[in-house]
Length: 199
Image 1 (tube, one colour):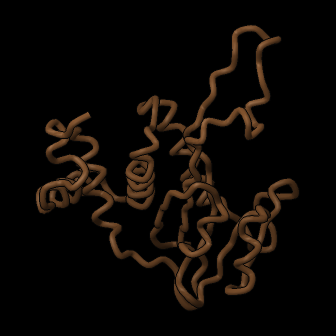
Image 2: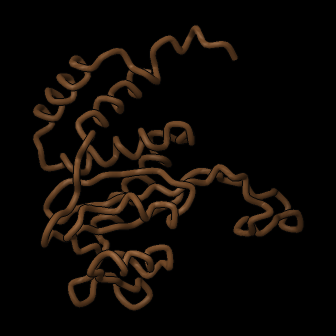
């Protein structure tokens, strides 16, 4: 419970954050979390878990917008295409991979795209910073979280984003800031009275 309250405090620091702006570059990418289907023991009983009929419906896309040399903002959507209204401030130059979900952004922004089958960075276009955040988030899920509930996926994404944005800040300063954020918060909307709720 304490960890969730600390994640909520981290999210408070991101409230109202605007990423991008005139002449700034922001990387946009998505990664999917949740909806894991355990494979059957016998090979003859295994199914193709990529097919929609075998999906659980719990899989969600975490979309990250990372400004070069600046801050990041995460959000959770059912899929990448649902995130188009979330993307960056006017005048920003978004950089994205070649997913068709980002094609509609060309109408609103001067885009740079990268095809990861050809290169990870080419002609100034890359999404390496966004991919780095997702790499850390996947390792956190497998390593110390072991499971990320879909109900709290946004909180975990906000925690990973906060940690990534503050990775160069000394640990003592991070702890002081986080403690200050947590102590200044009003009672939690998500985590107050949870023991009194009916099942």
